[in-house]
Image (tube, rainbow, N blue to C red):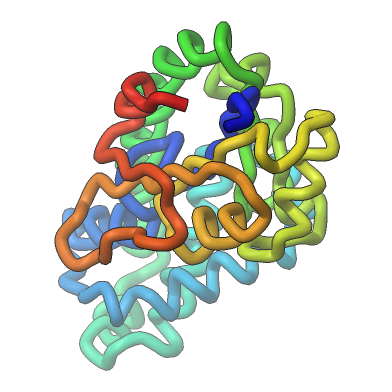
Length: 243
């Protein structure tokens, strides 16, 4: 078996913590007193994400707080226009100062949680860097380099594949092959680590990469059979894999 020379990581829900961004936003909304379900928030989350992808030239200069504030603002506006009736009424009845407070509270809590997750991952990556080339492959907004630099992590990565810069979005295999090309590696010499079976593990597995499913919340998420070579419940589990 070919030895693994590089570990590629997803960003959101992987390097910054074991929870998908939608679920983390959901927790923060509820903490501000907005009782909303996951299925109710999902369309606003999706709208904000797609709007962010389309605004990558503007977002390219954003650091983490500006990015999250932008996304939350887009979510709130979508909920005000298209959300469940009670949510629409609550947001419509709030004045501009109240809406600003909601955006700032959600943004602040989300950013603090993200920074804590990145700090924990940074310690692990510093140890892994002595054994592997490291890379990030993420569906992001054109400012992933800036986010990693702000976190003091950019120097750890030999490759950063930001989908908005490459105009290639997972699960498109092109984003993986472009990353491998930049690292001068064959697919069999790399492993992909991510929290999504569909966007991280499945396309990477089809290309011949070794795949690691980061499944910190196993209930009801399947078993990864056929697309994940390994399953871990914490990034620290990477240390125990016999590559």
